[in-house]
Length: 189
Image (cartoon, rainbow, N blue to C red; front, side):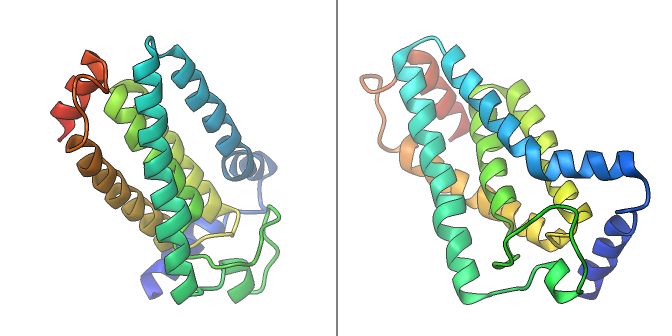
């Protein structure tokens, strides 16, 4: 916990000092998630076949639901860690519900999404991973998460992704997927 607080302080200490940095932190923590959803929808609609679209949509929906909606909420039910601004008594740069901090729901959702995109398109996946990491750091900077919250969300995303990958790899055939999607799944599994 001391290292977590040390890293948090190292990042958050710059909040409120230089307005362009605050603006960048707020952009990453509050608005980047919306842009990533729009980009993911754009990616979905760029897929060529209906089978590809259905596979991407169902795989991603299951991975993100498992990551953010089930595992993250289960952790928060059993371990209600106060957010940094609550525990340390300061005003964060963005408004945020005071509900549990660990693990980060944003990190769990967006890293799961990034891994799903990586399965289909490595370039898109890497960009989403970089932007998701930036979002996670921004959420630490603005004071709504500790670094371990972000790492916990990333770990949950990875576990969820591989669970869904295992589920899908045993239950698809060339009749349910187009050739490209089937090859993608076989390479990953």
